[in-house]
Length: 100
Image (cartoon, rainbow, N blue to C red; front, side, top):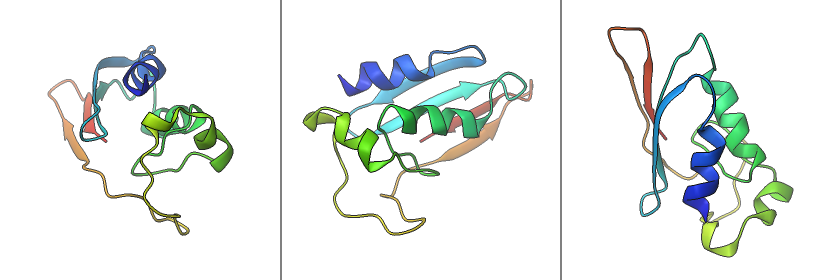
């Protein structure tokens, strides 16, 4: 359910590769920054109810996702998010490879 929603959300023009691992709540994504920005990807995920390491879904959006997809363990303060792994690598084509 969550995996499908997350992967469907990032399956857009400019994204070359994506894979979400449910057990770790980690999204690995490779995208072309001239086609889509990292900020756009984060906002798209927030819109469907998921937090990222850079931005938080609204409580209203988060409340809409199924219970099995909820993972917040406490109320977030301003700028505070559950810890998530992030790697940022650039390949020889200037593409970005991120894990969130």
